[in-house]
Image (cartoon, rainbow over all chains, first blue to last red; front, side, top):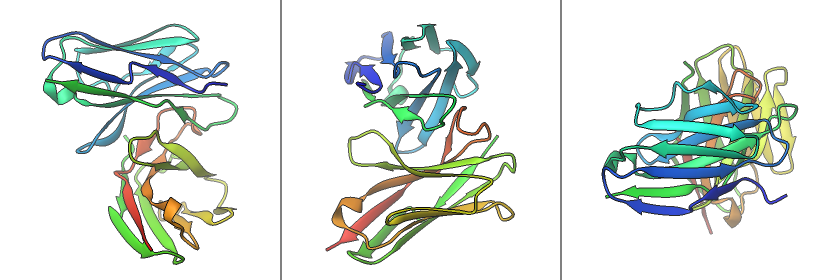
Length: 113
Length: 113
């Protein structure tokens, strides 16, 4: 298996622009997680899905952030409008409910100028 | 919600010596405690985990201990090697891992030659 796939790997955008991050979980995994990593705040859970349904979005910082999972093999995290403080590495992870290890993708490094 | 404290933030040890990283958690309902290793610019990768029905788990040079009463758990690395240099994160979860992880702030482990 190719593991969790994220795109793009790097994104540089200007304040106010819309940003869309993409994730393909490991095939067969029924949980998908979005995390954000910054020096100041460390690794934070933003939202997670079970069987494509959002279960807990309490970590989503503001209404500017939204996430969707239209099918079992694809999820998006959108920021609109983006702000410089959104600059971070965004990780997607997936897990199989029967095991529990969360496998992380390579991350998307977002820079908002 | 859960809160995970991790100490120390930086740990420097001589090659061949042991390293110990400690974490405390706040939610007594937490029952799954993974440890992740993250090398510079890479994704977090699980190195070992422990569940609340077990007090200790070992995998070659790595061991984790859990004290449910005191709500703390520790990572022990023996006979450290240069490739052990990385940032280590502890985490806690109440859903057995099939929910979002709350991470500690990380420990930068430096192995001195």
